Length: 243
Image: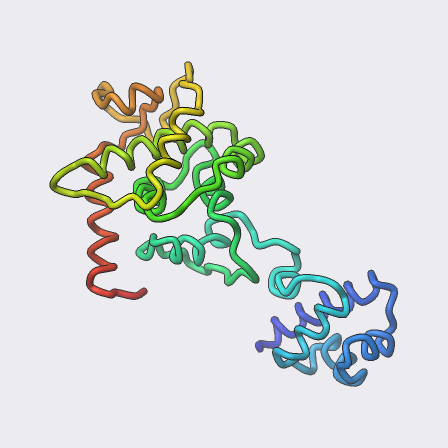
């Protein structure tokens, strides 16, 4: 552990110890970590081993994430979700300084996080059919996270479900969908929008795809660009490439 990390860890430990109303001796009794070690952790002179970290977190009743970022939940930006995107199949998306979370979120929350905002990252958007084809979504949770983060996510998700279903029907590039009934239910339960949405990347030509028109999407991506993106990802998986 670097000196900077030791200082950060020590500050968090002291902050949480005081919040819990414990002395160093009191925390030592509850955690079974020697008091002198706690003193040295708080002064950045000692790096706790994994077992001590677990004991301290348990005694203070805080998640491990607290000692990683100072927060009880992993951050929602791209640095905070990069590892989760990798595990979901988007393995070629590199984020400089990506953070290692204390735990992974529900996939429904990850999708809401990457689809929110005025301009979601197009490389992630174009890769989401692969995720939707392989993962089972809880529809209620997906809609709840959409409502929490950005109401536009609801329509964007329905549109992408529609795209995924259409891609799976193409003879030259079929995507085996694990839970097609879930994707179909999402498309049926979302009301068609009256306002257009270009996801911050408007197409230069008039929208011709019926799927784009159905959901009033004016995003520059096309079925062909989705196919190209998915070929990139599946090719990496076939070759067993790792970042």
